[in-house]
Image 1 (tube, rainbow, N blue to C red):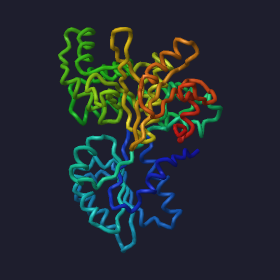
Image 2 (image 1 turned 90 degrees about the vertical axis):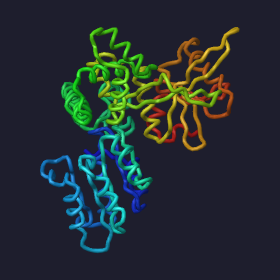
Image 3 (image 1 turned 135 degrees about the vertical axis):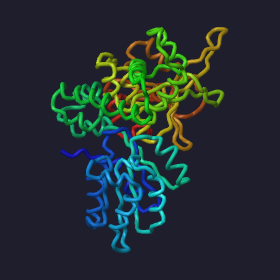
Image 4 (image 1 turned 180 degrees about the vertical axis):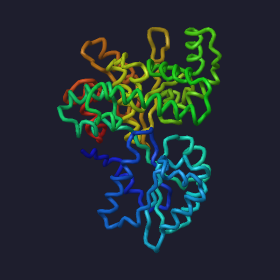
Length: 413
C-alpha cells in the first residue's frame, strides 16, 4: 500500500531547478526518505528522466559509510556526471557527512545539478547550511502523517481512524504495524533507541535519565505554560538531590527541538502587539511519541486534539503563536488566552480548540477571548465533533475537527 504525500511532493516539484539546495527536514522516521524515493524519483521518471540522471545515496547505511568523507562524496557524485543534461542528486541524512556544507556549496556552481538532501536535526539547517549558503538553501519541512493522509489509507471510517490516530500518531511504520502491541513496541523503541539516543550521542549528554525525565514532563503537560525555571523547580520537588540546573534544562529543550521532537510556541500580546518571551508552550511533533513517553496513560482527548491542531497548522505553513487578550472584570484587568493566533503573510486567524461546547458555561469560556479581540480577522472554534460548520451571531465560525483536518482549505471561508 502506498501512502500518497502529494502536499510535500508538489512542494518539491514546484522547487525543481530553482538553483537552491532543497533541504527536506523533519523528525526521523516521518517519511522524508520515502518522499524523495520512491515518490519524487517516480515523478522524475514519469517526466522522462532516466535512472542514470538520478544519483541517490543513503548516508545512514553501512554500505555507503565511505562517503561520510566529504571528499569521497564529492568525487563519487561528480564521477556520475557524464553529460550536460540535468542530474538530480538525492542525499539522505546529509548531516552525517563531516564538512557536508562545503560539498553542497560546490554543487551549487554546477549548472546541471539539482540537489535534494534530507536531515533529521535542525542544527545542521540553522547553524550550518544557512550560515554557509546565505539563503541558497530551500527548506521543505515534513511532518508525520497528517490525519488526512492517515485516514486516506485507513480501512475504516473517520471515527475509527481518529480512535487509532489519537494514541498512536502518524509515523508511517506505526500505521503498518498490524496490532496494537506492535504499535506500542515500535513507538517505545523509537523514543528510546532513535530519538533520545540521537540527542545523547550528538550532544554527548552524560545523564540521559534527566533528559528522559524532562521529555516525560513535557509529555504530561502538552499545551501548558512552562519555562526552564519552572521545569527546574519540578525536578527539585521530585528529587532534592538532582544536580540539574535551569541552564541545563534550557539546553536540553533546545536539543529536543533540534531533533524535531517538540516545537515551542510563544505567547503574543494581541493588544500590545508584542511577544511575551516567557513562559511558553511546547507541542509534540508526533502524538504517538508523546504518548510513548508517558506509557500511553494520559490519553486526554482535549489536550491531544489541541496538539494535533497545532501540528496541522504548522504543516499548512502558518506561523503559530498563543494569543493573550486583556479583558476587564469588574474593576480588575485580566489576561486570558486564545489557543492559537496564526499568520501567513498578511492573513491572520484566531483559533480556539474545544473538545465540546455543549454547555452554556463552556461555550462562554471559548467565545470570551475571541469576542474581546477588537479587529476584523477571522475567528474560529474547532470542536471535537462531526458537526456542520456554522457562524454565530458574532460572526465566529464553529467547525468540527474532521472538517478542519480533512480539508486543506477548511480555514478559507
